[in-house]
Amino acid sequence: MSQLGSRRLTADIFADSHRISTQMALRGRVLSDSLNDANTSYLELDIAYVSRIDHPGEILADYALSIVRKDRLTFVVVATGLEMAIKQNATTYAYRRQWPVFITVPGFEITGQIEAPTNIDLRALMAIGVERFIPIFNGKATLSMNQTIQFSGELILINKTAIEVLCIGDKSTQ
Image (cartoon, rainbow, N blue to C red):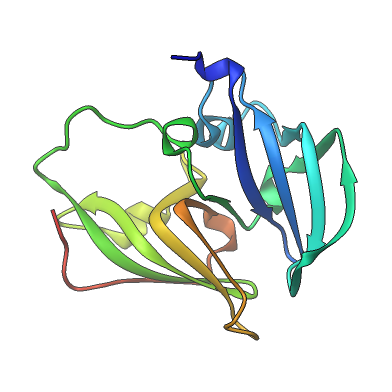
């Protein structure tokens, strides 16, 4: 099995008006750790294809090396490669459940599942402490002004500061 640091993660990074389709070498870390690292304000990208959000198939430019400000990112979609995007717990704790969510960020509606305690506290969830990005599993991001444009993946990491509305469904699943 190859080392985590030697593999590349493919992801789509969304800012207010553009999508950056990228591959990045995480150098032994998972993506969520890199995004939540308070010691750096930027995320380095090895390969970047830039497109407008409303025309995602039309590549404006491509670059071998890029850098993006983490605080300006709205969300990141990881289609596959969950093990390189977030740390997985070997055991599922009995007090945690998967909750259906509906989240709005500028220009998008995001649905999926969030892992949280059975006595979920939305204020605690939204507090910006160690984790600035919330993981949404089996997520789908739909462009608000054109619902035919959708992006989905095993994981969507959403910048808490970009969240406008967060709604939790009333039924959790194990």
